[in-house]
Length: 224
Image (cartoon, rainbow, N blue to C red; front, side):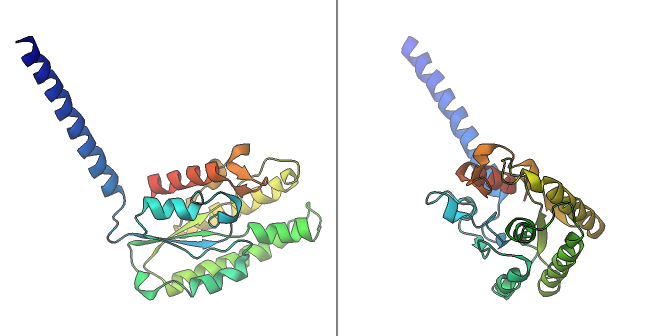
């Protein structure tokens, strides 16, 4: 008789485990509609960081896996604002739908080119107005060509190392411009500056690492 009760106990536990598992799987599947929803990645190495991580650990690879291949990465390493227009032209027209979410990450390379590569004065931020005007023109282009998609703007993170600390105030000014613009135009902002914050989030001091990729993808999947 004692074995009978033991059997009933194990059967009950099995039912609970199966029930919980089915609920979890259903909840996970409902969080991303793989039949309709699509992610499109535009911009720079924040979203195209495969050159800085091991195989399968990039933002693109992780999102493709998590979305059941419903992610299209058109972002290209080293891209500046002007370079994203060619990426936009590669978006299939049939993705002009409210089931499509476009993530835009660009501007950081424009800032680095002006202040780091060209060595311009970091206390002079007047160039940011010109850069941001170009950024807004780019966003308008996406809206015009794909008016039905959901557009998510990514801010710029603050690499915490001796090489890039000097640009934090510039990045902060850019981000404040971005937040204000997004608020006034009802855009969603993914604040990766709050997601990628630790040294192990970065490769080579500035690119998203494998750990950073995971953190970023987790945030995207949890929010969108």
